Every structure is written in C-alpha cells, then in structure tokens.
Image (cartoon, rainbow over all chains, first blue to last red; front, side, top):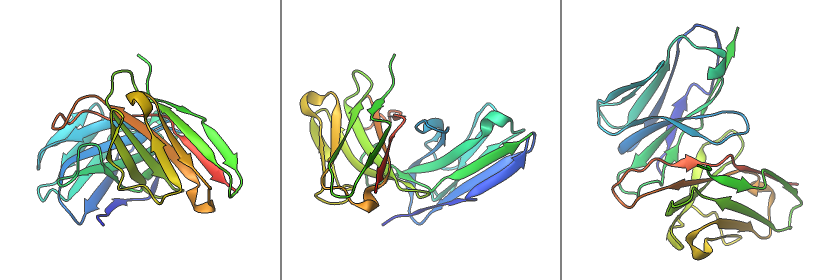
Length: 113
Length: 116
C-alpha cells in the first residue's frame, strides 16, 4: 500500500532556532495536513493544504504542498518551549473517501532553553 | 462545546482478555473514525462510520476487532480476544458534513491499550 515517509524522526533544537520537517509519498495526494500531538492529547490540526504549490502560514508555522503532489514540508520559525511535541503529516489519497488519512510516523521535536 | 471524548484513557489487560473502548464524538458530527498508533509508527486508519453505518472498515486488522455505533451517536471498539500486537494508542476522530466538504477532523485524546 501507499506509504508516507516523514523525516526527521526526531529533532533536538535550542529555543529560537528554526525547525524544518518533510513528508514524501510514492502516490499523489489531493490534500496534505499537518498535525501536532501534545503529550496525553490527540493530534490537533495545524495547517491544511488543498492545492499543489500552495504555501500557507499559521503564525510561526509555514507549510507547502509540493508541486508533484507527492510531498509537503512544515517549517517552524523561532521555536519556543511550547513547540515541543510530535508533528505528523497526513495525506488524503485521491481514491479514498474523505477522512481516510494516511499519516507519517511523526517527528518528535524537543526544544531546550 | 465538548470535544471528542474517549474512555478509558488507559487500559492494561492480559492476552486473551476482552477490552471495549468507547468514543463520544462531537455532538452533531455524522462522521466518526477510529485510528490506531502502534509504538513509534504511523497513525493508521481503522474504520469510518457515517451515522450508524460503516462507510469503510478496510483498516480493521482482523475479525477480533468489532466496531459499533448504535443510534449514530457514540461508538465502541471491542477487541476479543486481545493479542500482544494489539497494544497501541487508539484514537477516535469525528467530523461534520458529507462527501466533498473536506471537513476538519477533531481527534480525541486516545486510549492507551497495553496487552501483557
């Protein structure tokens, strides 16, 4: 089946640094989503991308939907301690019904003061 | 407005036992999804309800898993008998709206299931 490759697996960064992570797929998606999971909580949607080439920002977060529709990246600028958590990319396959998402394995972000 | 609620938050059972997980979606949300994350891996789709009907259950691992959504409100996911590989975090999500609406999915906090 389809597989999403998310990298890096984990990141240890200092407060104030920028963070970048990405996901690639062997298949085309018509939607890319980025979620964050805080400890003990469920994933919360950060950014949704619906068009190839789309670049969207949400505060210090910026994400892009790749032109080939097979990849996406998420950048976090000027990281702060509350950015700690697991970040997941998710794609909506063209052939599947809405909500049947495919997720990456997550990027664990640790921010040190 | 209350979010998606899952119960219990943690469950530790022995291999061969039965466990039932419950999910209360956001009121008025017709779509209800079950997902599972096995340690360190991706979150995987299990199944999708539209109201009380199973829209897609292609992600259910095997026939030891049974999901129901009687009356189209809350849903239960029963694992019987549980095996070691069933351990993981089970997430429930809900969304409003029908096909083509691209409605946002709201996730619950998950049930951490440990099978010993």
